[in-house]
Image 1: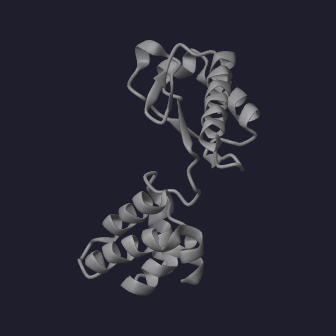
Image 2: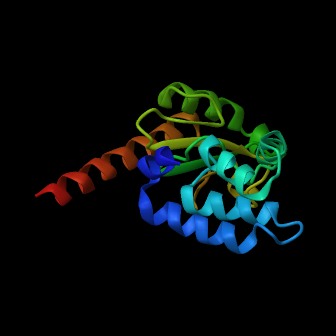
Length: 172
């Protein structure tokens, strides 16, 4: 329990504990509990799964099974910038597979992971609903279309530069 407070701070842990107390005795509430954890912590770490198991009496293996079955939940912390690259048919035939390879190379991670600095998460999507702009990626809800491998990398570099500039201005 101490580790949870160290990792996430008192406010977030207490917020989650309040939601857990509210839901733990409601039949069929595990998905709701896990949704709360995902929202509050940004992912569902092992320590939170242990707490849920202890408080609800549901075996940890069952909770882990739910977390890893549904794409809504993640056991890996999400990056500050969440990149979702469309691999649907329209995007794929226009080169999103090559874009994915280039982004993995540039970021130094594979799809489904987060950079070690916590800045970017990279995930694949089946469709982002912007087929006319194929190939498409979305970063924190903003759509970037008609991409090439090089233009996708330029978007990432621009975001990094803006993030560094913003951080520098906050220090001044």
